[in-house]
Length: 292
Image (cartoon, rainbow, N blue to C red):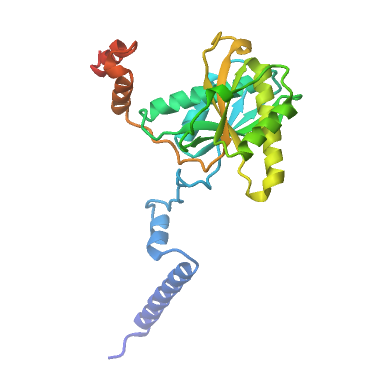
């Protein structure tokens, strides 16, 4: 049965519209992405999400924490801790010259290690925080260091062979001593420094010793690192009288981002670490866990 002329024209136009829409959809699909994703994007649906970098991936960008020349150091300490809870490495950089940059760097690393252990609930096998000195210019007080958590097992430490830093210690002689003991197979070398001048000598010597070993060992040489801890400080407030016992060791592969425990588990770990709650902080911890 033949259709009227007007109806035939309307039917042809409808078929053409359908074919055009199908062609556009085919081109969209061939250009990349599914048709359903395209439809959702044009119809007000949820947008396409870009992949979020995995915090455990060592190829992610390294956070940079600014090291001020003077003033409060707890802001950079928090920056280091928060960074290492997300990624394996954090970079510490000076923002301006400052005579106490060496001592402040060691103190930031040692305090960050304490706070990071607390956030991780004092888990066994935590390791220790160490500094890899990437650049240090003592005369202009420029420092760039990478901080990471090394999970190597500390070797037997011989306190009698501890190297004592002084403000007039010869850097070249100290660097040769560090390199010689590393050649002899010592896993780590203990050093003691008091004040910024001796801390400055330590960082300089580590950089020089690193260069000596790299020239001897070639491209396979593993850089040196410094793992500082606060010693029996003569004064915890004066940088000139602050003591550090630092281990000089090889920079092994850093661990992944440190695990962070929930608050209740962290309090329980602190309670257990404080002699079962009978130590000096026991009463405050028991009160906090009861919600008092």
